Image (cartoon, helix red, strand yellow):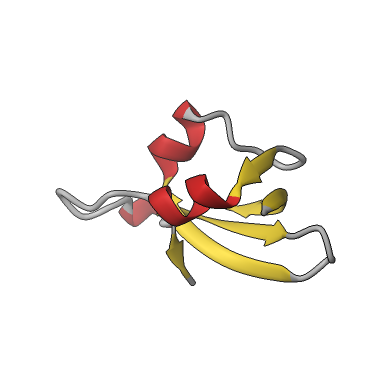
Length: 70
């Protein structure tokens, strides 16, 4: 299955920032070929390195490998 990233929600921790050792996570809203959407989370830096952004198509295998539901 192939998904398209339809939205990307990055964390905003305001002036507090992140706790020491806390890894910033990004939430992706994915849509499959039938238009069914689901939310997944992964480390923000990993999404950046993989060039995952709105409009990019990603494989179901990559989603299972790198992402967590939610």
